[in-house]
Image (cartoon, rainbow, N blue to C red):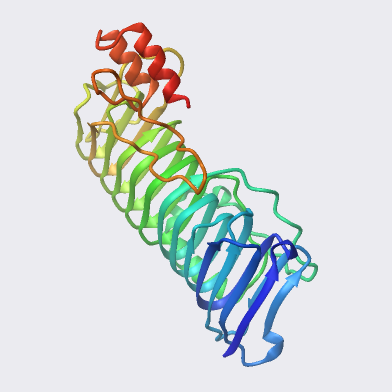
Length: 387
């Protein structure tokens, strides 16, 4: 094992590239203006160990076949970083960081907390846990180091039918990544997750877009706001609680149940289809019998949740082949509890003269329509909401 302890000034590079056959990596955001690296890099031969800046990248490479690296990398949180991890078997924990994060792993665990930016993971077998994450703009990716090897990898959308992909997706990542090291693809989405096997847990997130593919594993989303959501699961259950749709949601499940508990201030159109399963909803729905993807044993139901509003409202389109769909509402509550240091919350919850708390423009306008508040108070609450 090669023990390492090094520091660099914050201006030395803008991106970090990590290559190791397997390892445990901790990446933390810290105060100050120095990058600090401390840990062990396994390498039987010196030529297999490559540590240090190259162009605008910090290269942390340990490419010996049986390497097992363990280190902590501390990055100043005042800067937005690019972090690229490429490993056969990895346990990675990233905390309190502003970054564009991208991870390719054959097998492992990814834990992201208190971060801002964009996040992408592709894995044959991995559990992904993300808590307190906000999508923000990230800078352009710096040019790759001069001697970086390039491997052309197609985007997942071009791999063919998603059910066919699922059959071999569980083995692809681990076999491929253990053999090769090279350039990885990047995504402009807030969150992009593709796994052959593993559970995905997202909690307290505020993102404009989410792309999620999983062959085998459960997905749990709790608290937050999601714009465009594109999710396809082959075998596993989907649960979403206290998350506000801020854009269209497309959810597809082959074998598994889908349960959504939406905030009461949600306004959206619902289109629910199951081939072999039941549909349960607290919101009145209309059964569609002549149009849409309905089979002899299935059902398709459509409807609208929330108060009527002018303009376009989000579409929630859910289809399961074998599984139940359940839709219910819950009392609205603060969904955007996480904010980075020195940043104002994305929304406030102004109170009326009666003490009632409102979380959105829709709730305020509904209260005005119902006569619970007057025009003057509605105007005041709307101004406070936008602060």
